[in-house]
Length: 509
Ligand code: FAD
Ligand code: DLZ
Ligand code: SF4
Image (cartoon, rainbow, N blue to C red; front, side):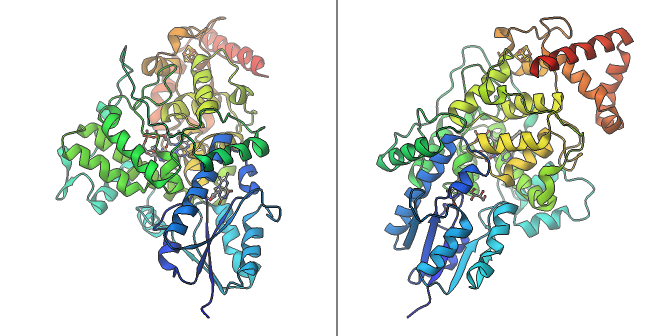
């Protein structure tokens, strides 16, 4: 009799070609999928995110069975479920009298640590394979980073363009430029229509999951209404096709725009599908390149989109691993304030924040500029403890896993790593939000004012942030012009700004 090999597959590893599945022998392997409440509550994840993952896991298990695999699927309601990965791996190893464990490395330190203990936990040899769905291996990223003083994404991106051949004509970038970002900052146009992504009606499997999530996690943030996620590989491919046909052509132009009542604009909304493994990053980039080459999307759209995935996505994953497991406790600016309640309730008069939190509650999703320049920017300006910001972002977004969320939050958005990722904080006052959105027109605050009862809070907070953090930021050459601006205010104006901020912060408490 052949030895049984246990192949645990995690909820964000739902890929038929996953390295552990590719290395396993179908005739001797038992694939283990585990629904465990420890993962839903490590931070209290948004209800829709939990429902999406559990439904996608159940559908993936069915697809594996149809493909000839033996699958052991542990449901969250199984009375013997220990509700943790360790407990379930130990139980399954016994249940199947397994002789070995074969798995693909988790995307984050916490779960990888747990995987590293599975061998001693079960007394079995445990082989942990690299996750080759990423286009840069951990080793390749470390080699690129080695000896560099700063990790400039654009440099890494060019290496990746050359490595993959994406948007390359021989050794030169297509269109004669590596980056078309300068064309990708258009404010929203009046009367513009935004083609919505496809909606997938919940089937019987998803309906069961929705009932389970409502019963077990109904008190978590967010709602379950209108659950329309793609939950299978087939649906994910349909969502990709739909994006390429209907939204990619304008993706570049309006990449940074924000519009009240419009949650998706021209964004792909593919991140939960890519991050869970239903779509592969390379095939998504190839689809965008094919649209460009066929004349169905302009270069600024195709390049802008591919840069997000081939550049940013791979880059943040590399940063996650080189930054180490204590990255989430970095706090370069010594920020200690609690996250305001309205991040959970949406109850604020600041329209930009109310819109971003509202989208997050409804959809477990918000687009990049809402995350960076509204939610992240505000938290940094008022000095929220970055660990609290990290836990919020990890909990509320359908695409959030530590490998991608922590560099974006701790690094890019909060500058809590002191510049490992970015050379300056993404701090902005109301003028930026006003330029890129239609929020300010309908806001109770006046975006033109810095002080006074109706002044937009972002304006005074911006200057106060700079003044307050002068010791940490004052010598940053990219901020010299801003500090010059602060120094040119008369002392009375500086005092008025700081008094305005003190008054505003009191209202938050
Ligand atoms: P699109 O605008 O259509 O972009 C295409 C794809 O590019 C995305 O699907 C995603 O796979 C990739 N991408 C774009 N920007 C980034 C980025 N900065 N890092 C990694 N991938 C990127 N993205 C996550 O996947 N998970 C997170 O937990 C996450 N947290 C974030 C937190 C903050 C504070 C910020 C500023 C950004 C965060 N992002 C995160 C990046 C980005 O906001 C989302 O990837 C994007 O909004 C997903 O929506 P979309 O699929 O419509 O993206
Ligand atoms: C996020 C999540 C949730 C909510 N539930 C599960 C689960 O029940 N089973 C599972 O295998 N994975 C789940 N996940 C995803 C894991 O948290 C993810 O695999 C790790 O964070 C590693 O990135
Ligand atoms: Fe946000 Fe200020 Fe504009 Fe209101 S005025 S929407 S608070 S930026």
